[in-house]
Image (cartoon, rainbow, N blue to C red):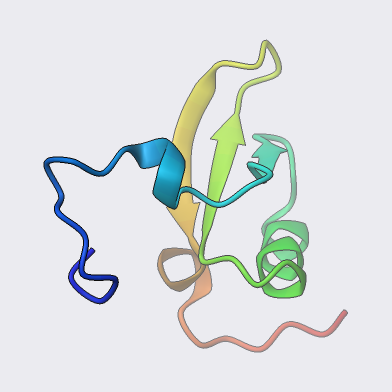
Length: 71
């Protein structure tokens, strides 16, 4: 927000969110999730249950740190 010189109280989430929303099901392997985040150049991944409900948001750093994954 500060970098873009926007007022946080006047800025909507819609205006700053990434589109399309990238998500994975909870049964997705860690390796597949890491590859997905790296290939799509995203740092956060929405994890959903099979019924589509949000389970959590995971980050590339919290998932593996700096571990290299061979594709």
